[in-house]
Length: 350
Image (cartoon, rainbow, N blue to C red):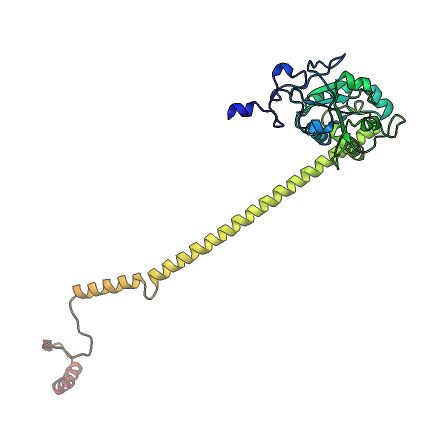
């Protein structure tokens, strides 16, 4: 199974022998860029006979792929270009895609100035996975001699008439010969759209490149504009710094609020726990009162029993005897004798 997978190319067709790659076979495993076309003619050694679209769609002839040609400027190579080449590559079951790229001279003459040089555009096409061969300095209008030189079977392009070089449609002779296959344009992206974006946001890109180290001379910017852009860059940096500080301060405040809320919640929990423990220990039904009651009972059990005052005693108590009065001395006065004699009847009455 692994050998079978390795033996097939990206479009599902079995790979040709490597020695026939220059003659029309697909590149082996897409591990190298597409070759350039020879200066004189196609280097294919396989016989080349005329094919109809019906024959090509059936995948015949089996001994060689169908040679399809697509041309263009391909400035600022983008996904729209790649999708068009993908359609040209898959228009037939077994296709060898040749891509012609016009030179700077022809492009500047008939269409306008390009952003990329011709060498840059050649290299961009060589590294597209759908391209098998690149023709440098391709003609603006295709001639029978050019088609014969490169052994081209069909020409792929979108079906919209291409008005240029004094012609209403440069592909009209190809269409009349039955050698034209149509592809679909990708809406929403083109080289003109990309250039329009750059021109619309010109100031943004000039400031961007000044920040990245390009000089005003390289960007074709005057002294006043250069300083204006640099001042705007400084203002933007200050705004960004202020914005960053504000975000950090908000983040810090939020963290402080979260921490304070956590502390308050923890304090409330701890205070509730402390109050509960205090009440449990010192409350009316707490452990402290139980301990006091137990200690009181133990003290009562250890101390002698004493009856309360006023209660009748169960055991007879011994009365204290009254000591006799001392006899009066001879030196006592008559007044003291009288007092004694008066107190004696009171004591007897008691």
